[in-house]
Amino acid sequence: MDKGNHTWDLYVRYVRCPQCGYILESRQRTADFTCPRCNSLFKDEKRKKQTFGPLLDDKHQPSEIDWS
Image 1: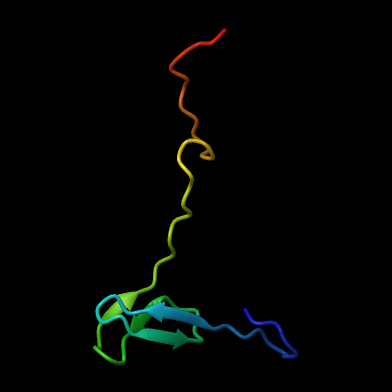
Image 2 (image 1 turned 180 degrees about the vertical axis):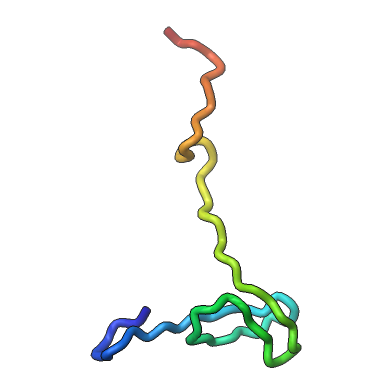
């Protein structure tokens, strides 16, 4: 969302077509798109949050060696 002196929120999103690589500018909140260049239909899906292995992940693995 862009900040500014508007009476409504501006919503701008950029999406790349998976077929031809064309970048679309969209002001709609829908996830369904049609590429104007190659006419392919595609859905913009949110990417999963990446974790940094077991160090910062919530699922801890049991230790292999007991140092006590």
